[in-house]
Amino acid sequence: MKNAHLRMGTLRLRHRMKDTTVDVRVRLDRFIGEPAREQRVRAHLISVFGGDAEVAAVAAAVSEGSWFTVSAPGLAASETTLGEEAQCFKGSISVPGRKRPVRHLVAISKDLAETRRGGNPGARRTVLCDDGALFVLYRLGVRFGLPVLPEWSDWFAEELARRRVSVPLIGLGCRPMLVRGTKKRFLGWIGHALKHGRIEIPDDVGAIRWPRQTTFLNS
Image (cartoon, rainbow, N blue to C red; front, side, top):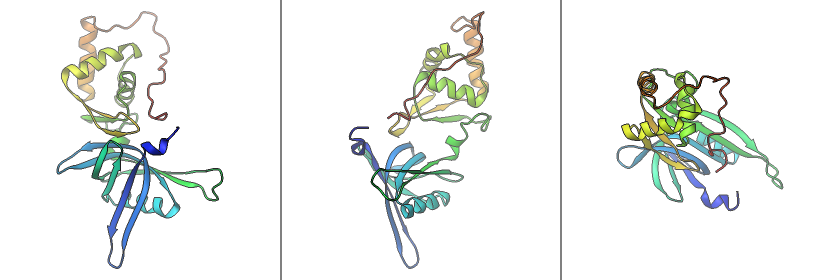
């Protein structure tokens, strides 16, 4: 965490109303974005913190589908929005020597929210907050109910690269990626690989234990 503030970015909300202009800036420590048209970015995750009023204003703007400006080291200033049906999660951070806690807000897009277990089983794309081979296989397995083993993660990563269906996304504090594919397609890969001996199911397979797969919370 040393010098963590140097790696953080800024999220700015500027909204003109009839009689006034709302101009709010909060610190940004996590961000996932997908390049869009006209130098804009479609956000999938923002994690910000600040005072009561600032964080409340950002939460309200997220629910309205408003646009923000985000910037960070290595990330050019971009216009972004989480779109419709974004979800917000609020919390507080107690800081020694500070009378009031810092307010924390995490907001995720509909696409990212649907990566939960069974979320939109007919989806053709999955947004992930980490590009580690083990994490990618685990999250897709959970979402689509795929019969997968941790030992298959390297093979699956090779398939994604060979078929060119994975794309890195814009990330702050993480290494996100987008995977294109359906449950039916992934099951087809697994069946073909088992048939041709590229992967196998051990005879003594029992309870499956997945090790820690991501550094998202440690960055």
